[in-house]
Image (tube, rainbow, N blue to C red; front, side, top):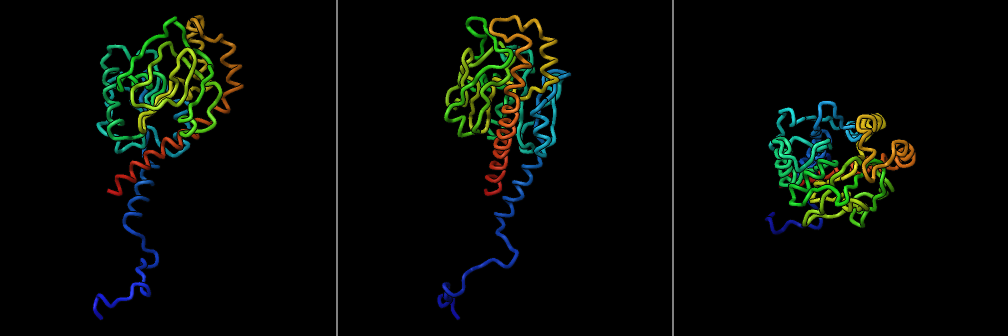
Length: 273
């Protein structure tokens, strides 16, 4: 029988039982790999902890690769071996001239270029904003956000992750402008830009990472800051936590699951090439 005489309608091309296309097997492998990769965690003090975010990432099956560039530890040249990266907060400013600050800001170009999941918390968000060309500065009237404050998710923020908490925990005296060509996800009052994204890179001005123990430590060691304009008094930190923490915790886990899925999407795209 010649090739042209084959009746395709009666002889469909089916894979052998149990066989799957090679591209599907590569995509499954990529997704499994992304789900088990460590998350790079950047901290700024010897006593710093990834807090609730670290706990949530471990619960989702990701080990933590903790590094402190301030003390000489190097950051990876690529995030190909990580599910994502988180730069946390600290008492320093993204405007400081310390070498490690400049190095971290420059390094953020890696997840931006590779389109890997990146999350900046407070100082980390300010570093991301600076890397994208936005200004980081104190409030014009010297006000701060220390305690719980209301935020308003935008329509874009609701699409990324629904059911944002009404109030979230803050500890900062500087804020930042919305960088060009980025998407505003949540707004505030004294500091209008509370959350934004550029591709798979996100910045939060607030602290969803704070545990009860961290809050106790911060309000004790930084008690003098509670007298600054706009700061909440000591007792309100814990009274407000009782009101808002359950919602913030649930929202954080939902956000992190979606954020980490972006690592799988990157791996799938690479596997399909």
